[in-house]
Image (cartoon, rainbow, N blue to C red):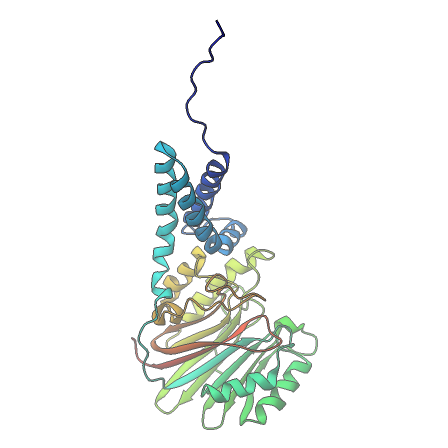
Length: 330
């Protein structure tokens, strides 16, 4: 009689099993973004990849849950739930909320080493009724070009950081239109030195509304992680001023970074992206996937976020962030 082979259970498909393993790993990465690690590089890396990890985890684990059976299906479903949790925490940033009347409006733009089309940036400021403009990564010729382009539409240069010896990344230019009073506040540097690549602080007064505007450019969380972590601490210190504060600029930080949440808590700050639900607008990258790469922010203390929009400017790898604020908490 022919020899019989022992019965074997059904073989688990390789592709769904691999998808499950990768999905669980992505879900774990997303959950790790909720923890501020003592090593800034780890914190910076996880916060940067977390939004993509969430999407990958939900798709991979969802596929595995359909393709597999038994305990594997249960594990896949658990992966979807774990990935959905940090996504749910971001939900307020993803759902548009009501807007209100703005007493003053500020635009911040990283000019990509001065390569942004500043004439378009100037027209954008006019079209969006902007009172004060902060241009980052703008030094040398960029300062002269910005002064010329914005003067043509009624703005004047009121502040600039950097000098001929600075690199483009360290320059910040502040411009204001006529009728808006802008003065440089006398404030000490935060403990340990300036914020990031340098920050510009001015006091803005328009009618009855007055606040300190802080235009910031944090260092890179991957290449200069320790300094990037210090930027968060120094910014929180500046935010605790004894007057209303609006902080804008390229923070090189996504809402998924645990240190971003710590900055809001320590500085008593409110994210306008979260308050107004504008988190679906990516602000950095040649391909601006929605909300995945939101590194440009507007944060307030003692003010109300009234409205916000994001505008593409040719030549820059960042979108301009236009934020309206009004007096008082809201």
